[in-house]
Length: 428
Image 1 (cartoon, rainbow, N blue to C red):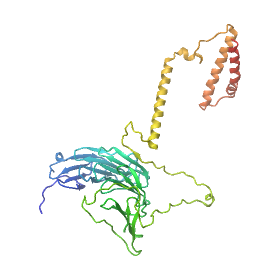
Image 2 (tube, rainbow, N blue to C red; image 1 turned 180 degrees about the vertical axis):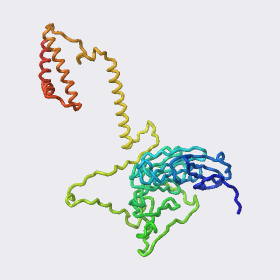
Image 3 (cartoon, rainbow, N blue to C red; image 1 turned 90 degrees about the horizontal axis):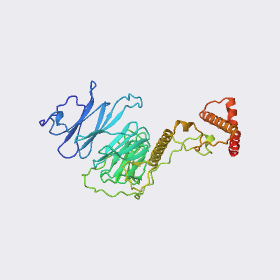
Image 4 (cartoon, rainbow, N blue to C red; image 1 turned 90 degrees about the vertical axis):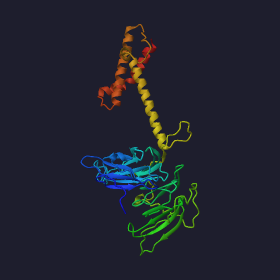
C-alpha cells in the first residue's frame, strides 16, 4: 500500500472522517496554545493544500477536548467543546459549549437556554435538524434546525440521552446510568408524546433497523448483576425479556444489520401494540414519612418545577391554536409591561402639561368660589391647608416613616376637618 495524499497540519489532536459516499470529508481539531484559540477545520479529499483549501474553519476558546459529530449527508459537523475546569465555579465538571460548522463555510455557536453540562447531542438522520440534551437536572432537551434556531423544546425531565429512529420520524429521550431509566417516545413530525416506558438499570439502548423496535440491556462490566435485555415496541409494549443466570454476565447486545431502504418508514402509531408480557412499569417509589406524619395529608411541594414542552416555531398571527402555559404567561407579562409603560408615559405628559401654579392649586379644577365673607374664606383656606398636610403625613406613614405623636393626632382629626369644610362650603 502507498500513501495517496497527506494533510500537513501541526499539532492535530483529533480527526473524524465523514460518513456516506465519496468524496470523503474530514474534520480536524487543533487545540489552542500560548493564547491562540483552538480550531476545527473541514477538508474534502484530496484538497489538502493548506488553510485556503479548507471548506470551513471555526475558532473558539475554552476547549481542552472536543467531540465532533458529522451528519449523515456530510454537510455539517457539531462540535462539543469541553474544559476540564469551570473557572466560574458553577460546576465541578468543567464547561461545555456547542458549535455548528457547515461545509459551505457557515458556522455558529448554538445557544443553549439552560446552564449546565451537555449530556448528549444527536443528528436526525434527515441531516436538517439535531437534538441536544443539556442543563443541570432536570435537564432540558431541544431540537434545533440548521440555522441553530430552536424548533421544539421538550421542557425539563430526568434524561441524559437522545436516540433518533433510523428513519428520523421518532425520537426517544431517556435517563440511563444514575437515572431511573425513564424513556419518552416522541413523534417528531407532530411533536406528540407516544409513550413513556421505563427500563430500569439499563446500560445500553439501540433502535432496530426497522424503526419500530428497541432493545435495552443491562451489561457487564458497567453492571455485573441483573444482566439481561428487553425488546420493546416504541408504543411502550414490552415484547420480550431475557435475564441471564445470576452466575453469568452479558457483555454485548446488537441488532442484525441491514442496508438502508430495506425497511420502509411507517406511520407513527399511538395505541400500544398487544403483548403477552405484563406491563413493565415499576411501582412509583414512596417517599419516607415519619410515623407522626403518616396519617396526615402530604404536601405537594417540589424541589424542581418541571417545564412543559413548547413549540418554538414562529406561529402565524391568524393561528387559532391555544398557547401553552409558558407562552401565555410570557404574553401576559409582556402585555402588563406594555400597559405600565403607556400609563407612565401618559402620566408624564399630563404632569408636564400642568403649570406650576396649577400644581400648587387645590385638587378641584373649578375656579375658587368665595362666600363674600372674608372670615369664612379664610377658614376654608386654613382647613384645606391642614387637610393637605394630613395627606402628606399619610403618604410618609405609608412609605414606612415613623411619625411623632402629634403627627398621629393630626391624622386622627381628618374626619372632623372634612366635615367642617363641607359645612362651610354648603353654607356658601
